[in-house]
Image 1 (cartoon, rainbow, N blue to C red):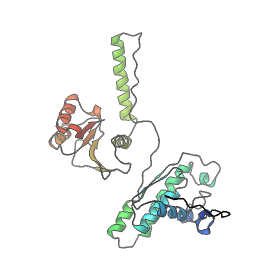
Image 2: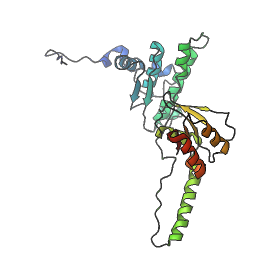
Image 3: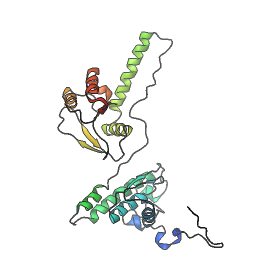
Image 4: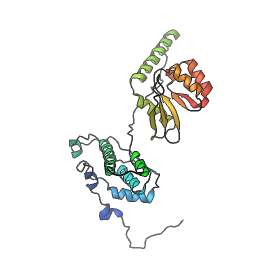
Amino acid sequence: QFKQRMAEGKKLRTLLNENEFKSSQNDMELLGMGDVFPFPKPVFFIKHILRAGSAEDSIVLDFFGGSGTTGQAVAELNIEDNGHRQYILVQVPQTTENSNARRAGFKKISDITIARSKAVAEKVKSDYDGRILTPEDQQLINQLGFKVFTLTRSSFPRTDFAPDPEKSEEENLALFHKYVAEKEQQLSMGFDDQELITEILISRGFMLTYKLELQPSFTDNTLYLASDGTKEAYICVDNSLRDSTVDYFMQNTDTKFICIERAINSTQKFNLKNRMQDKFFAF
């Protein structure tokens, strides 16, 4: 390792002073969003950084997502060099008070981030319209999708019941049963299936880029096959698991299966755990 110091009197040169790297509205104007964000980072500049500091399969993290320039740069660079980079953009829900963005219907900066990411995907797809697509082209188009995650409370309520010392054991037991019933009702009514599935899969170590495929062969329950390229498992978040579904996994123990614990009785849980071992998990 060595350090190369500049000669005395020399000044550091910054790329930001070069005309080709200066901020411009042109990138967003081509997406029909020219007046929405005042000073977006230039896509060309971010792509220049990514060429120098990323591999073709890197995950690019931008903690200051802003208008979504980094996402556009990643998408365009993948097209240019057949890369498979992925990006994670983080943006706090900062409001857009008294601005062109607000007048255009964007209440938060994160709304702009999402809209631009969608516009980039649509533009890339439109650029391929009328072409004969190679397998590589189709793969690049397929990887344009993205997911939006928001920090929120867990779908699974906390267990914070405490017995009342002034009540009898029977009274506290009745209160506990009431508490459990209320929490179960909250779980079944307060969240949708996709929220439950997302939290469960992430907690089980799946990547955020997991894909779900509905399994129509299961007629008594709604089951999905979840896969992120490394991990794979069947998952069901129905309130009740039918015997036919249980029987299937009792006979097919070469795959992983995840369900909601309250969806099965103690006998079903014992049988599944006994046959599938660590390939079965009740959340």
